[in-house]
Image 1 (cartoon, rainbow, N blue to C red):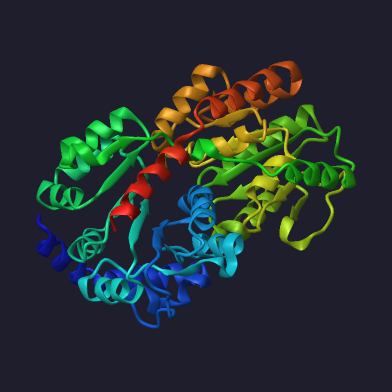
Image 2 (cartoon, one colour):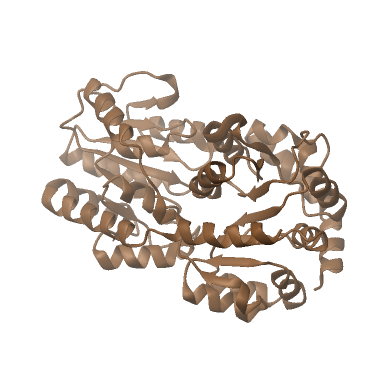
Length: 424
């Protein structure tokens, strides 16, 4: 399949795209807002000639935040535009940066939507986070002489096999990229095999290791926990959970409560449309449940606190003693393990970590990754770590060691972007 055929198929899929958008808007009303931007209609009046960064969803938006901060500091003369595709990503971007950046949804990868977007923005440099590859957007930039970088790029063997099936589309697209800053050497080789130019592929590491935590965050969390009278309670968090995981988490918590009646679970679904579902599930299972969004104080009777707010995940991690990271008990590939590690939290996770294989391998090797497959194993892990504070502290220190040993990717990525800016 080549790019014209891909474009034809995308046009034929438009009715299904509309239906999916309507379905998502029904589940999460925010998807029904700013629809025009997805088709390059009603775009903001951009300042031109700056840097465009695309971070598809919430995870990429969080990962891009340190890069955006560095570019804002290093190039105050250039407008920075950040695009995404999801309401949660949009909310996070606007919360973090406000009017310091320009922002909109990225139009769909249709030539008649790409062209007006690029013409209105006219960036000097385009930066795509991780693996959100859109052939028509990349081609539109290439045709106009705008350098395109793929930042913090990752490519699993499974994804590489998928791309290889469409070599006539993938190879030309990768050949139009000017920098592919990959996380590992294995991923660099996969990109080269698929058609990327060797001189454009650089192993820079993962910028997720360059996470820095504001010193005020743990202090604020400790103050809130003290106000709950929960300093001595065993508190754990199950974060970024997906459909099918909440039940496992709640079952493990029930077993923990049988031994530690004062235990508190902070349950944080990955997607806002599941907040209400998580609350209902917890209450249906008989747990005394509060919602974080109400601001109501946790009491000695509270058994589950549902984190139904946006932009607070790091703070909620800081409230807990142990962290389970979701998206891993189901075949979703896992979520960012380094955020709780940076806060010194021992890590528990499911077995499905294919989105973070290298990071997971390092944490596992250091001894700060307890992998579980079901409620019984999750409960056993919680019981072990709560019963042995020294072991929990050893694991937390190991995770911090991995984080610190791998920092520097952001500086290497910025050096590559500076070279492209100098050429633009």
